Amino acid sequence: MRHKYETRGIVLARTASGEANAFVTVLTPSVGLIRAHAQGVRRPGAKLAAALATFVESELMLVRGKDGWRIAGAILFENWFVRMHSRAPRTRAARLSRLLLRLVAGEVQEPELFPIVTGFFEALATLPEDAHDAAEVLAALRVLAALGLDTGRIPGETSVFTPALLAEVKAQRAEYVARINRGIDASGL
Image (cartoon, rainbow, N blue to C red; front, side, top):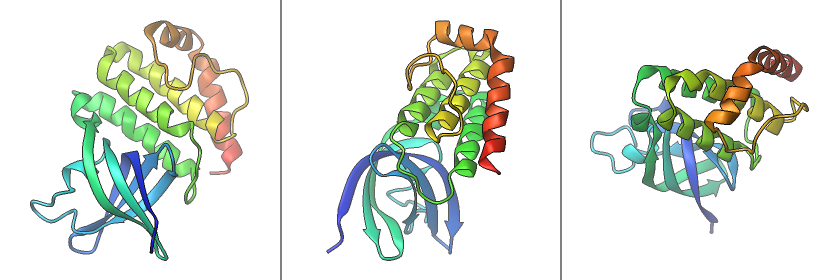
């Protein structure tokens, strides 16, 4: 019998597979970043479709099989895509997701990544757009640090994106962007 995992997860990407299936890249706090097969999710009226859309946070039922992960169930918890009211914050969320997927080959179990991403998505959904650039810089730097690609001091706690903290990041933006670029170079990608 295969073990079932119940966890919360954020869908970072979704790729079509066959006529009605998809591979979903999910970031979870307990099992990390995984790619899971979702059967029938692209069919019209599919029950899991809304809970497995890009930038959606859901309660997931995952099954680990011999061929990898499979999504057995999902219940929508938070639709970050809808909460990010315009194209600009969604673009920033997509850039951070692409960076994370680029830096992580395969699966990784890094517990700091989930609160970084949820905190960043919350900042994009609630803070004014003039703070979004600083939030993106801070989130990218935190992701690099969590993956061991930056060892410098990072202000604030993992999931915190307050206006005062983002003002500090904005003041030192050039230094932080240089660190991000060094971290990406260090990854060899």
